[in-house]
Length: 382
Image (cartoon, rainbow, N blue to C red; front, side, top):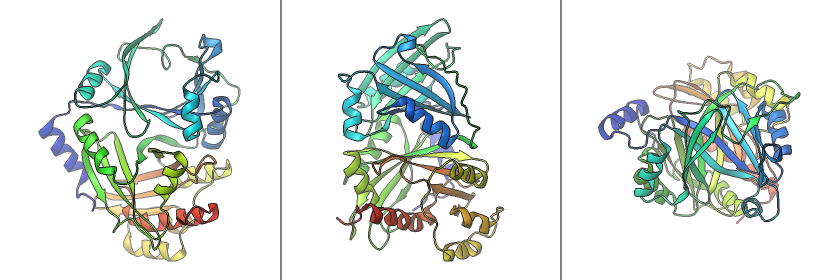
């Protein structure tokens, strides 16, 4: 069940336990993709990201090409290998286009690496100093679930655009922003009976707390179910829900993901907006596809259950936007269909009005919508 007064819980634990791994926020998210140039065009056109920085042959990088996109506080890095022997090819062949790195902004990347490795983390990259004429960045990294990596990024002695080795990416094509502001949370899917293993990993290795827990009694439909626990760091800036499958009559969305991703990985990225109606309308006009809307009875119930919603519920219903509340306020959310051919990665758009939860009241409607998509794909049956 959802923890009461989430903000108070975080503050209390933060004060009592301290924080051996201070995190300032999400620095960037890096995708390994088959064609970074084309993927960058997609995220610019469909989601309103702007050209920001580039690394590749023109900057002296003979191994990979990376395009950095920016929208407000969100930075996406899209990376492709430049030859068949590069190990990134193995990741793409197994998982398809996927999130590889969730980079976290820290004050001390060396201490962050040492503290987490001391607590059992598997190293990905030893602390490394990267320099150019703008100063230096220190980066280090550890593995989390599957082949996903947390990179620690220390920038206090750097005044450059992004990272050493990157130059400004100038483009005549920069569509306007769709109103996305920052990453609210990122969700990972793990295999059968692995959720608690990774919950304990985040607690032990990174000092996170189990903020919320949802079991298969809350997250189920007639056909499928899943379990989920939300992990958060001490100051509450980083939140990582972790899902695992649960037994059901048919194949759950988590099972489908694990099958097509071929392992554990990032399921979706939730991005915040201040005006979800405007953002969703804009994204739809750009070709972004969202899950089907719940039935009219869902919105009739919302009008009774959540009477303080400022937005016009009929307009929210028209766009298929979901509404939920907790003791701190309410939230509005909507989910895209998978953004690639494998039914794996998708995005959530969220607008919070005080609520600290994750839309528990919407789980049934959301998963029924996902199941309709699974049925179309022929992946709902076991």
